[in-house]
Length: 76
Image (cartoon, one colour):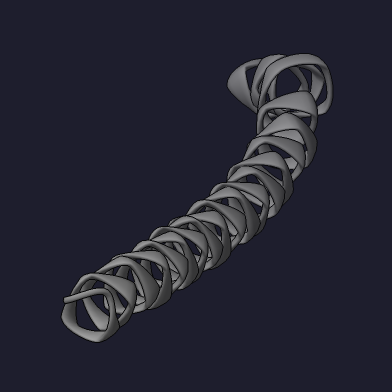
């Protein structure tokens, strides 16, 4: 009969905090995964924006070269 109070005390001081901290760690992990997904999304958005700017630069360069070619054709 003396083991029941020992088990009760151990469960209060070891079991209950382990459960509580386990849930805290699970919540933190979930929050970290959400934050990581947000970073990945932001990175993908920046990559798309970078590609759009690169394409716009290529379009401007193409317009510039087209104007140069047109002026060369008109000169002779």
